[in-house]
Image (cartoon, rainbow, N blue to C red; front, side, top):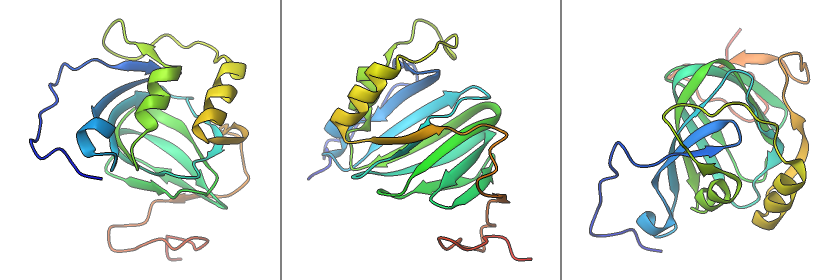
Amino acid sequence: MSIDTQGFVMAADSPATWFLDTSMRVLASREHTGGAFTFIQWAAPVGFGPPRHIHPMEDEAFYLVEGGMDVVCGPDRWAAGPGDFVFLPKGVPHAFLVTEGPVQGLQVTSPAGFEDYVAELGRPATQAGLPDPTPPDHEHLMAVSERFGYQIIGPPLWATDTDAPVKNAPSSHQVAQPGSDPVPS
């Protein structure tokens, strides 16, 4: 695995993809990073959330620029907002729900390849911003997810879900340990 030694700049007006009800703009793909990671700028409306799923091969991380979301990872649930960083390790069931927004964020998936999933399930954006909400083609979503190795194990989160308490994100001076309360009492 080697990263492009020539370097590159992704133009601010590079095309976006409407992926489900989100807008995703791939800033660095497998070709740019030698397969090391995918880097995406994304936006999602309030109420958006993927089904609970597992990435068996990729770690996933988000940096939230605007908006807020509830995140479930394994048995834990956190509320994340602007300036928060969310890490979702491979092999652990996770999901999120946009609660304030639209959310604007940056996403890293490592190793690369998530951009191919986005391209296959998405469609080229026809204008700036978010697409009009549309119901997903569940059969196609399941088939593509299975082919990419993503395991869909449950429905999306809903604001009424209470499977784990919502915790505030830890401060910059704390590191949340899996299964622990990230906020001291």
